[in-house]
Image (cartoon, rainbow, N blue to C red):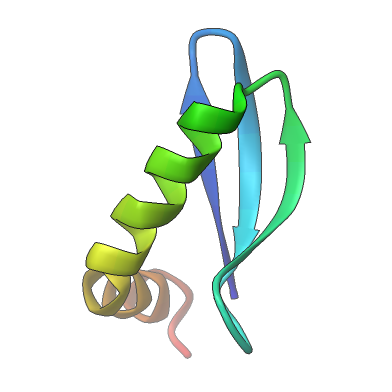
Amino acid sequence: MHVHVYCERGEAKFWLEPTIELAQNSGMAVRQIRVAKTLIEEHDDEIRNAWQKHFGC
């Protein structure tokens, strides 16, 4: 399970399992990655529920 994060200068991919961690970064600044990870952690349940609803898992 993973999530993509986009900004005007780049994008990143974060794994959600087994723990939330950066998988790829293309152009995002370290600060943006840190903010994105924090938001993912804060909304982990919502993201997982939406992912499971979308993919039917």
